[in-house]
Length: 150
Picture 1 (cartoon, rainbow, N blue to C red):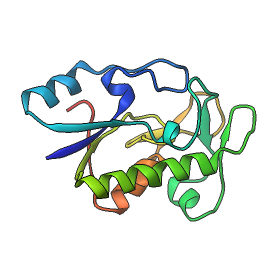
Picture 2: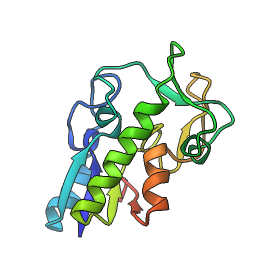
Picture 3: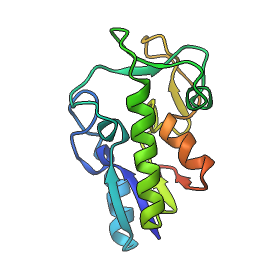
Picture 4: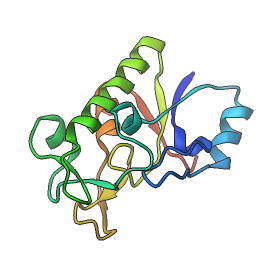
């Protein structure tokens, strides 16, 4: 099995705040099971720098809406970063297809990688049920999302 892994979960400083969310459980799972894995960050691949402003999907919209061209992803200062998020997600999907990646372990609470919840678009730290743009695109293309809590 080949697995895509959110780079921040492996200790790479790719998050918007320049930090990581190193997850020892994920690292041990990959090592114990001899899994081939690929660390990527869709937001960086989409051209966003690290560090960067936090971004959220517009209030009341879903990742499906964004992928259909309805609505946008905005940074905290109001900059439209929709194309960065969409382009990065498609680059990751293309990578997965090229290299036969069938599963992904992603970081929840992210406008890209959230798989259970995302921010509500108000920049008030309120979370709502939903998935990020990358997660939606991967799921739509048959990639299985594995819970990062394993």
